[in-house]
Length: 295
Image (cartoon, rainbow, N blue to C red):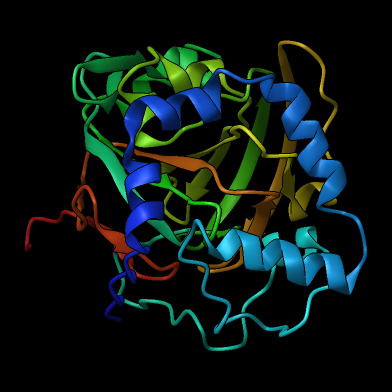
């Protein structure tokens, strides 16, 4: 499935958003937690009038496209943030030995896991042990692939299973809520490891390990999971271990962000990426391919 290029924003708004110093100041040098809590409250106000007005303002600064949404009217801004899609809006790549994108996203840093270390941006490394909150799972991804998928605020916010798999474990890690846009990734060391996140550990049908790491950001009120009852997990400081045993199918919805954010996908050796940095993806497009002797 081909993706359509984004329609550029009008000149003055584009120049404003591309001003790195101003962008960084407005999104990071603010009371991030307080603003995130305010947006969480504001977005749940149920008013058709207020929602229409808020969406109109939102459109002035993003390429918001609601043409594939299941609903055409929203009761609140939260209702729009967490919108579902109409049936058939995201066809799944059905090829064997392929994994599909779990989200609509822009591809960020990606490549090979080396010495347990990956990049958030050029010259900005971080370790998987810090990202995952434990050393025990790191070795299984050594020499494998990592891929960063960034969701903007205007994108579809739900994330899905990249293949048939079994969810074994979720680890909630409390943290900050820095913006995860490219400007912040170039300036703040180990940003993903500072933010609130919830690594999901899965195994494919043949036992191959896979990790998907949703990372929260400024204005992200929470990360929700269907297989944990969709209720927020306990927000204790440090790590909260959530064991589970849930089978999921390729494309099955796992949960959602309550605003835009980032997913980091981790796979062991034996896979190759089918995407490139900067590429725009839709959920269901081919993301990774298993490398076999015949390929």
